[in-house]
Length: 285
Image 1 (cartoon, rainbow, N blue to C red):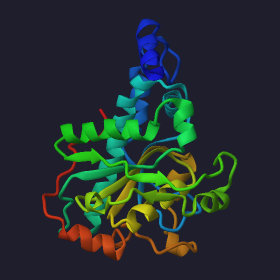
Image 2 (image 1 turned 180 degrees about the horizontal axis):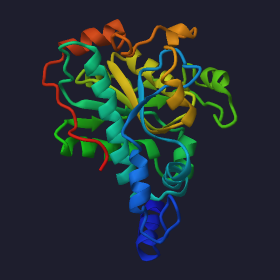
Image 3 (image 1 turned 90 degrees about the vertical axis):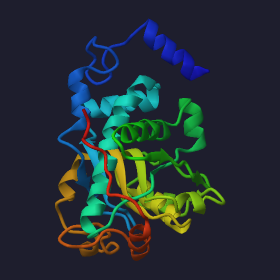
Image 4 (image 1 turned 90 degrees about the horizontal axis):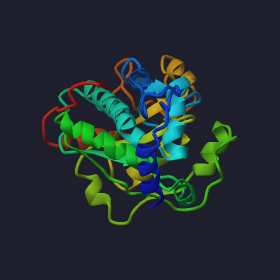
């Protein structure tokens, strides 16, 4: 009910652009274009948590992009979900393209399964909506309209309470989230229907995505990558640095310098999936 009133209020009393404040609707053309950045790019936090799949982001978490994400997540400006979903769809396409490029002859047949990182129940209750799931649904729609079957599979659950991540460093975030997520009982069959891309609105240290990847893999899913709308600016620079295996983390599972994407299980699973190499035709528009 609260979300309905927010949407009605936004139509009757329209606010300025969520990114820059100009009186140009929920999102002006300049800020909408800024969400796409220069196209999805590979990002890597430093240090990179063990088990983190290759992550792609549309834009750095700063300036207009930061303002738009906060407006959607914390202030419930739901009309922004379409633009954020467009940006996330580009990141998803980047993650899939990165996987396909690293495995000769591999396609990603079957529908893309977008698995959102779940928010804590108390956070969803306080906000009145689940931002990551809402953006994931918008992204799946963009992918389908571009010709790539995709659906959202919200199978992850929080199995225990965790401390608020704000203010925690990378090591403490990993400790806080270790073993916190699990897949819903009986979801293994659903996860086997296609390649999995983990999705979220934002990546900072990568701890949440690494824990989500662990939980999906434990349930039998083949994680080919992760996609976010925005990532910390420093992670764009770190992506050009050494792979995790060179900094004390797990061996790199991504394709860089000839390294083949995915764990051995995931490579085998995806090579067995029938279908065409079929990606979304384009980035954010």
